[in-house]
Length: 589
Image (cartoon, helix red, strand yellow):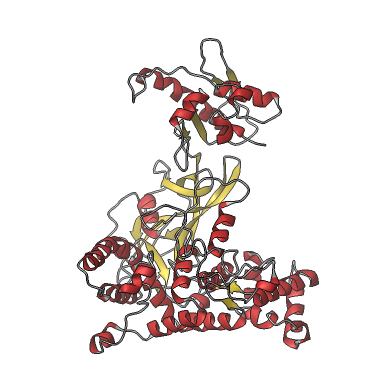
């Protein structure tokens, strides 16, 4: 089905002579041609009180239609929607929808007026959405589990008595973080004393079975909104002794998966809060004609990060993280390998998160390079180790010989054809390093050896040694500071801190080097096309005179004939340094 009412080529009036000059005529014409159009639809005459304001007396009519549709969505018995009317029309629509709705869109009817209003880079100025509040329901809290993400974040998840919510059965819902969980389940903002376990073993708990209000954020993600204090279960209290029938709200001191210590992480928020002042200082230095930028602030951030690894103070941040090595904590390791094998990373075909978890649970793989070490060779069929691994994978539930073989072939394809340096950097899963940052880092270091050397240098860096020897450069000076910083804009203190933290984890560094040895990684400005093997590994003759060499190019809106991702890849091959998704002062085109 196509909702052509949102198609700018129709709505801006370019086809007005064919299908009408107003929105309602356009919809009627399109419906007669066999298109599916939004239904219900209603017309309301709104008086203009001034050049910039509408007559407020007409607003209740719009709100009435909005509330009517919302009630119909919630399936209120015997409810009908009275369509608003113009001089010659009157609509009435019953509460039967053939598709899900999440709000109302108010549009100017005249296609000519729509042209006058125009559009921004993202949205039309002649239309505005009025969303419905998320649907909600009351159910009972059974327990709280801790979910561990790829970056080590520990998230409390509510286990609920299953409840129907907008046609979806919800039995699990996010509690976001431990501070939020305490706030909504205890009903107070003052948790400074209750949040910490005491020396005599007291802890904050709530009784199992308490009543909570659950909704779906954006009609998608289930979340617990608040506790229903009108239930008949007593208030949460601080108690000792029998724990049966109670749910502890205290953050875990150790990771439930690997046993490593946990810590509240505020590094990201502190760095973001401080980055503006630091950037201003750097700008002032540059404006005064000095080429040197102090790295003391970055070193301080790195030291603070190390200190937080032993901090359990809930006031220091909202997000609790596992401080152990990422690849030695299984839930994090699964997320790390899924991230590495994703389309933006190594782009390994035919392997899902559930299958990767299955391989890890069977101890077939532990690190991203494990499959490449076995199946990466051109003639892996002759290797006894490869044959043994193929048989083990084929014997797993849901696999079989064909799936096992397809996985091996996919790994060999990636290993032989290679990946650009930026995708290798992204595949490492370094915190704060996304696709755009990976491109910027790759542009700075040009090849994988230089990048790994920078990581090795950062692993041994300390502010004390740099103060004793002025010749020692701070970590990743090529990315942040001095004249070289002018070449790589967009890499801030948070990314530098994450790179240094990564370099100090021996397990992560070993995994990164093993992966680099297991597949081809192409230098920047080397032409790589998987569809044309003759070009692989050959340096582009026009690399120094490409049309978009070194430029930052942003694509917005829609493009005829290709997606934005395809366009970004095309200009990158033509020399573009980065293709972010938003316009900034760094944008060239």
